[in-house]
Image (tube, rainbow, N blue to C red):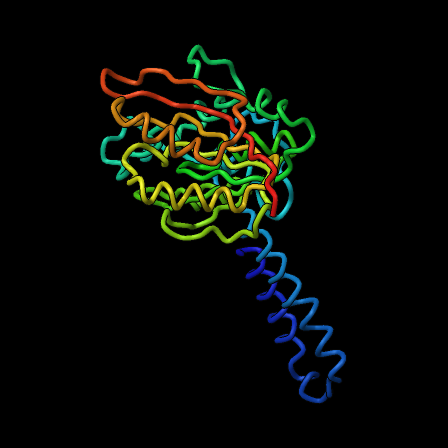
Length: 282
């Protein structure tokens, strides 16, 4: 901006030197237009582009090549500091998905082996229907990590987000993914039999009333195509309520591909499953 100011001041000084001659000379509109373009508009445009490049300080010893005009979202995601939203901060304002803003841990989910039987890998689930899973829905709470990992396998995932106590929707969008602001008690804005996959994690737990659960599952069944997969990921509930929730999941007579139950605590259990919607007569 200082360079632009100095250049414009020099132009004014040049005009001041020849003001007597200018008074006697009539400048055509074309000449006036050319002067404005070269001496005012173009320098201002260049300054505007330079300002757009000002984001955060460059990472020391970084090998990432930054694009002109604006830093890429990937670079910004790495640079941003989410310590105020990490699980170590007890004043973060949300309780669900406590580690969602710890990117180093998030990048390991669904792609690295776990010792827990209810943790399924993306590669194993996609191998159930090789080449058939192209688009899906991640129904839960988080920062879009599941969608990011699925995109690496050329699968497009839309992530639901309520932004309860934290900027989940903004974070998903920052990562170049698609956030969908939707509540539990509304129909999903998708046509019937269109989704290849529905994944749920972190939100659909045993605190949900059975009537509301029934509504949600029927809507999932509506949008999931025949042959599509329902991936129940780490659903947990009180041990005494497990039979009720198992009935809710199995009432549609989906085919079981994966099914695992594991203790979470003395009184709670985890349930993970991958189920396939059967074809039905219209």
